[in-house]
Image 1: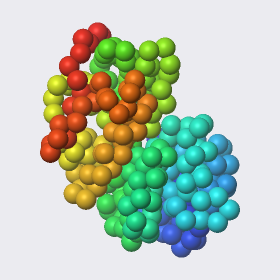
Image 2: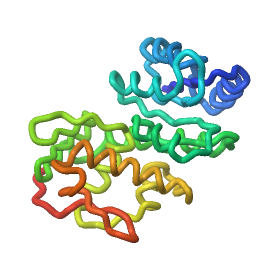
Image 3: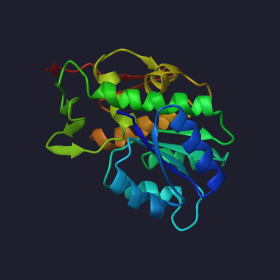
Image 4: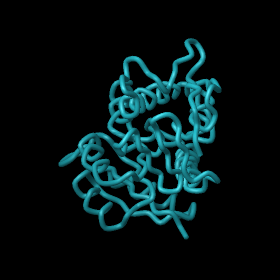
Length: 232
């Protein structure tokens, strides 16, 4: 069954180009011209992934992310012409899984889309359905994370990072290694993405994000999940 993409961009030529390209690649594609229209279409069409422009009239990409992530865990890739790192970081902090800077290579964008979709599918096919580790319970089949007695909402990228590290406690992952787990290919210059996702993860699962108990920083290298007692 074809995967469905929602392309959100205020420029008609970009919507037309991406729809044509991804249709040829075997995807089912729907489009929207702004965030408000995208919310309506997403609720009706239930896309598997959203390609989202940031700068749009009516409702911009940031506002769309704020609203969309309250009701869906569908992965989102930002398409941005803005080169300011803070803009891309904000998008990631609001729940986007990745970003691609305009002008972009359609082949690279396709690779990113397929990598994110594979990541979601892989999380649904874990051999171990539920893993308990310290105060954290992760349900791979339902893609749920429970910390203590509260359910935690994670983006697909945050879930995959947690699943990767929690499955190999004590192992040190470089940022590029973690990026490769997310995208299938490690692109230098996108390592900052990992730092943002890790910061978001800590805010959601740590008792004190400033003094992390679970996700440890290995300075000059990357990150690891602390060695605690795991229960399957």
